Length: 223
Image (cartoon, rainbow, N blue to C red; front, side):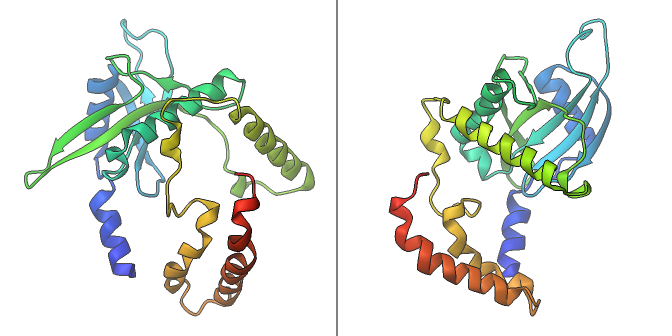
């Protein structure tokens, strides 16, 4: 994949809803009135921080939410999105500080929305989660205690997810999924992004070590 191909692919699949359109989605799909909305950072999906207006009908419920609009490719695999959403609900019930899932007017965890752009009709899976205030780890000074807490939480998360069951759980197992740690060799086709950066040689060495020492023993490792 060339850089041009990557940019074109992302441009073709990433949603590009305006704030007005996103507000209309929240109201039409979830029945909630928006008082304020602003974009949040995202990779190939689209996220919005939404403040909910209180009305006589919606006197309870969340005050702040995150509207998540999946890209067109991910929206073709609703089973995957459903499992991810149920994992969030499962972890919430187990006491983890995760978001709550806001159901649609039809009492579903997500909704497939079709948009006619004039030249074609595109479909996007839409979800609404409660907003979790806080600061990203990248903005906080890192110390041994924080690293310990992160590791402890990750271990607890791992052990808890061993108890998670869902009939569509197999949808999580995707071949050649670049975010899967088994797919490290796939990163070779993106080395161009580093240019002549001094870290490129290190990255190349790590990928080669992975191919030589990890790929040959993958069958012996626990997933």
